[in-house]
Length: 433
Ligand SMILES: *Cc1c(COP(=O)(O)O)cnc(C)c1O
Ligand SMILES: [Zn+2]
Image (cartoon, rainbow, N blue to C red; front, side, top):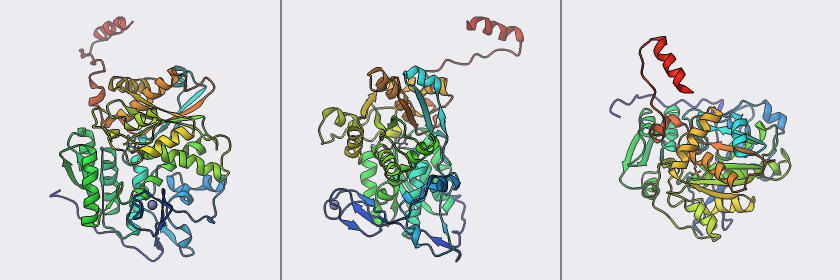
C-alpha cells in the first residue's frame, strides 16, 4: 500500500451520462425508498430491492442477441434508469465487460449423474477475477458511482474481496476490504495485488459483516454487500439470463448452485421468472437445488426443518468462500427451493474434495471448494432420486480452483520425477496399467 500507483479519476466528458440507480422497495412491507446507499427498510428492517418502472420497454430475443456479450446485454433488468439518458448519450458504465461466461455441456458428468443432459455454467472463468462475484460487483460499483461515492468496500469470504479490489482499481476508486483472518492465500494475494486497503479481522465472516455495517455509516462508504446490497444482488440474476439464452432461449429442468448468504440461489430464481414473465422463454421454471458444506449449512438445515426460523452456525469447513453462519438471504433461498419444487443438500468436506476432482476429470474444469460442494451435492441429489433420467440440468460453478489449491493438494497423487531417459518413462508407462 505504500507504493500504490496514483492515477487521476477518469474525466466525465459531456457525451457520457452517468447512470442513475433506481429507487428501491421493501421486500417485506412494500414501502418505497428513493435511490440511496441503503439496504434496510426504515419501517420494518426488511431488505430493500430495486423497483423497476412497470412500463419500461423490454427488448426482444433478437435485440438482446445483437448486443455485446456481457451482462449489460440484459440492462433492462439491471437496477438503473436507462430512460433518463439524454438522447444520443452513451452511458458511462463501469465494469462493462463482465459476464457472458461459457455454458459448456458435460456429457460424461451427465452419465455419472444419470440425467439426460448436463451443462456447467462456468463462472470459474469470469472476467476479471474468476468468480461469479464479478457480476454483483459490476452492478454495485455502478450504484456507488451514481451516488457519488468515492470508496467501495465489502465484507468478504474471499472472492468478493478479489472482485471489489479489481473493479475499484479499474474505476480509479478507493477500496476498503474486510475479511476473516483464516482465508486461503490465493484469495489474499488475489486481493492485495490490486492495491486496496485490505484488513483481516479476528473472527468469522459474520463478525466481519457486522463490523462493515457500522463502518459504512461511519465513513460514508459503499459496502457492496451491506448498504449497496439491493443493487449488488441484481447482478446475480444475469447468470440465469445467460443460462436461458445460451440454452437457445429455453429453461433447464433443474439448477444446482452453492449457497453462502443465499443471494445467488434466490436471484437465479428471480432471473428465470423475469425472463418467463417477459415471454422470452416458456415452460416451467427450473427446480432450484441449493448446496452447502455440512460444516456450515444453516440454509440446508432450515430447509430440512420445514420451519421458517434460521438458526445461525459457527462455520467449520474448508469451503471458506461459502462459510456464512448467519446468511442474510437464507429464508428467501429456502422459499425459492420450496416454491420451485427443488431441495437443499449438504455435503462433507471429503465429498467436496471428490467433487472438485470429479468435475476436473469429467468436464475439464478446475473449480474451487464451492464448486466441489455443487458437484458433490448434485451427485447426492441424483443418488436420492431428486434428479431424474430425463432431466436437463445446469450446475453453477462459481469459482476457480487455482485460488484454493490447498483443498486438493493432499488428495492428488505426487508426480514422479525421473531422468530424461525413454527407458525411465517406459517403466512408468508399463506400470500405469
Ligand atoms: C459468494 C459465493 C457464492 C454464493 O454467494 P451467495 O452469498 O449465496 O450469493 C457461491 N460460490 C462462490 C465461489 C462464492 O464466492
Ligand atoms: Zn419494510
